[in-house]
Length: 609
Image (cartoon, rainbow, N blue to C red; front, side):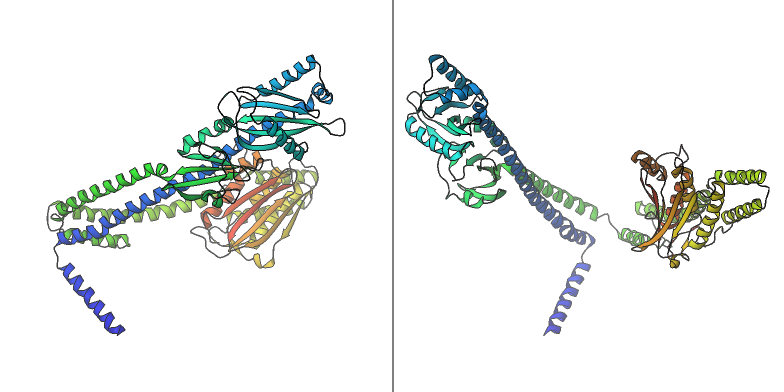
C-alpha cells in the first residue's frame, strides 16, 4: 500500500512538472511570480502588521506599568508630606503646653486657632484641620463650607483610630463629607495621636487632616491624558479611594474582576469592560497599601497600528498588481540566452572561471554576453594579481615587523662591554661578547625557519644574562613552564621584547631587586604564556594609552609600546585576529603581559610556527 502511494505521488509530480515544463516562458514567469513573489509578500506584510500591533501592545503595557508605579510613587510622596505635617505640632513646645491646660485664656485660644489655620494653609488641597485635647476641647479650621454634619460621630471614630495608631499616622480612606453650607465632597483623612515626647510619651490628644480627593486627581490627571483610559485607586478593603470617572468613589469593588486578577504587588493583564478590551496595569503602595489600577483601551493603543496595517496591505496589493503587469510585459523580452547567462553566473559564483558565453547576436543580450566574457577575463587577472600582491604584502609586513627590534639594547650592551673593558681588563669582555654574538646570530638567523619555545627561552636567558651584568645582578628570571611546552613551535622574538620593555620601564623607579616570572597554561584550544613583573605598574590612564598604542590607535611618542606592538602585530599576522598580546597592570604591584598562541600549528604564510 505504501509503495503504491509513493508511486502515485511520484507519477502525479511528474505529470505536473511536464505540464509546467511545456508552458510558455511567459506563463512560467507568471506562475512563479504568483507563488514565489505575491504570496510571500502578502504573507510577510500581514505577519509584519500583526507583529507590529503586538509589539505596540507589549511596549504600551511596559510603559503603562512604569507610569503606574511612577504615579503611585508621586502619590506616596504627597501622603508622606501629610504624615510629616501631622507630626509638626510635636515640635512646638508652646502648642504642647496648651494641650496640657483644660481651659485656655482668650489669647492662648487665639494662638491655638492661628496655629491650626497655618497648618491648614500648607497644602492647597487640605480642606480642614481638627485638633482635640484630652479635656473635650476642639480646635479646627475649615477652608470652605461648614463643620461636618456628623461631627460628633466622626470625632468618636477619629479618637478610636488615633488610639489604635499609638502615635503613628493613620490613613483613612475616602469618605463623603457633608456640611450645612455646601454640597457634599469627597475627602480622605490623616490622623495621628499627639504625645508629649518629654513626659514619657503621655497622650495629649490627636490631630486630623481632611484632604480633598482633588489632591489625588491633581497627582494622577496626567495618567489618563497619556493612556486615554481611566484610573482607579482602592484601599486595603477594596473600597474605591479615587475614580477618575467619578462613578465608583467610596464603593466596595471586591467582586470586580480586576480586583480578583490584581493579586500581586505589580503587574498587568487584559480585561473586557463594557464590550471593550483594556490593558490593566496595577501597582500596590508599600506606604499606604493602596492599589492603583490603570485601564488602557486597546482600541486607542492600536488605532495607529490598524491604520498602518491597512495602508501596508493596500500598498502591498498595489505593488503586486504593478509587479504583475511588469512581469507580463518583460516576459515577452526574456529569451534563452538570459537563462544561459544565469547558468554561467551560477558557475562563476561556485568558483568556476573557465566558462564563456557563446555570443551569436549583436543585440542587448549579445552585448551583455560580450561584457560577461570580458568581466571573467578581468576577474581572473585581478584575482591572480590580488593573490600575488597579498603574498608580497604579508611577506613585507613580516619582514618589516621582524626588523623593528629596538636597537637601543644593542647600544647599551656595547656600552656595557666597553665600560667593563676599561674597568676590569679581564676575560669578562670575551664572555659578554660571546653572549652578544649569540643574541645577534639568533636575531639574524632562523629567517623563515621554525623556532620553539625552548629556543626563545635560551635566547631570553642570554639577553637576561647581559642585562644582569649591566645592572649587577639586580634582576631575577623565574620560569614556570611545563617541560611539554618547551618544544611547542612559535614565531621568533616574542619573549625578549616583552622582558626588555619590563626592564626599561617597570623597574625605573624601583631601587631594589626585581623579578620577572614567565608561566604557561592551557585555555581551551589555546596556549597562554604570562610574563609578569613586580615593578611599579601603571595607572589606568597609562595602561589605556599603552593598549591604544598596541592597537595602532595612537603613535608611540614615548617609545614605550614599540616592542609590545611589534610582537602583538606579528602574532596577529601569523595566527589571526584572536591571538596576540593582552596587558594588565596594577600600581605598585607590577604588570602582566599575556601571550596567546594556538595549541596546534595553524599559522599562515611567513615564519613557520
